[in-house]
Amino acid sequence: RYQAVKTGIGNTQYSGQVSLTTTQSGSNYTLTDGARGGHKTYNLNHGTSGTGTLFSQTSDTWGNGTTSNAATAGADAHYGAATTWDFYKNTFGRSGIRNDGVAAYSRVHYGNAYVNAFWDDSCFCMTYGDGSANADPLTSLDVAGHEMSHGVTAATANLNYTGESGGLNEATSDIFGTGVEFYANNSTDVGDYLIGEKIDINGDGTPLRYMDKPSKDGGSADSWYSGVGNLDVHYSSGPANHMFYLLSEGSGTKVINGVTYNSTTSDGVAVTGIGRAAALQIWYKALTTYMTSTTNYAGARTAALNAAAALYGTNSTQYAGVGNAFAGINVGG
Ligand code: ASN
Ligand code: ZN
Ligand code: CA
Image (cartoon, rainbow, N blue to C red; front, side, top):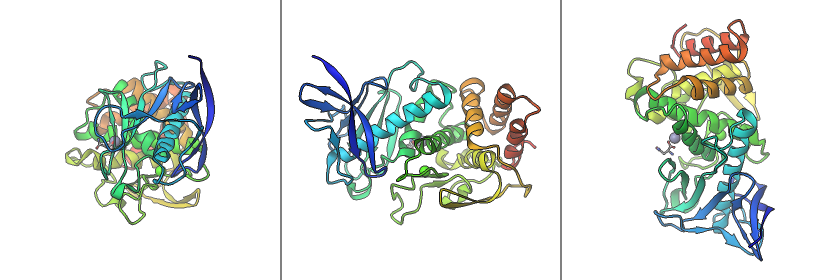
């Protein structure tokens, strides 16, 4: 049967009204993105296995902006996957998670009041719980970008999910999830250096993580120390998230899209940012060209310096900026 690529409307919970790429087949529409590797969004309807059912309806308007409509989380997830695909394609020339033009798929409404989201390499898919009281699905743009970026890491450096490499794996997902959020330029979900600020995961409106000062979450390290690899990977990510903030924006106080950041270095030496665009290019090249499964913080510094040298030269401000940002988290310098 003839299948047509369509542009539908998503009434999301976190990103306002957005365009969704869907597929029409006869009088039916599905959340199938024929423009981005065929990405599909499924409704697990509180199940925890299989794919549930592909979102399918006779209208091409999806969700109503609240959890009262099951397609709302589907709209957020479908938008997140499309935006992440576009971010990687248009920022790095990467065509999908494995750079082979093939899409992953998304599953929403996993379990009951499940407060997490996850990437699973074995299904090549990402899955989202509905959050506390099934009221706050973990489908915001930065979380979607974070989870899909675990797939990119698995397909490239394949950083082991333990010790310092595990922290670098987690930070890579926060860095590119943040890149996705800024790339989207969505007026409802503006770009920031916070992770999970939309999903109320702490119940008091605070974000899950802070890149300018990771210790604000109560568990993350701000800078490298010899035991940092013993922390949970979502806390040993702190120094790399902090390095990325310093590299992008520099130390000191700064207001971006209405959010005030205050970032300091471990040695008190001020650093100047090189801009987020260059910082993203450097981290992507470091991840995909120079890091391996066992890369630690010292190795990440070398990888990022090598990436900056290849992209901008060793006499560049970008190369110097990498050295300064790592010195700011107590690595090298
Ligand atoms: N949401 C978490 C993450 O992506 C799930 C996990 O702990 N693996 O890191
Ligand atoms: Zn993660
Ligand atoms: Ca964010």
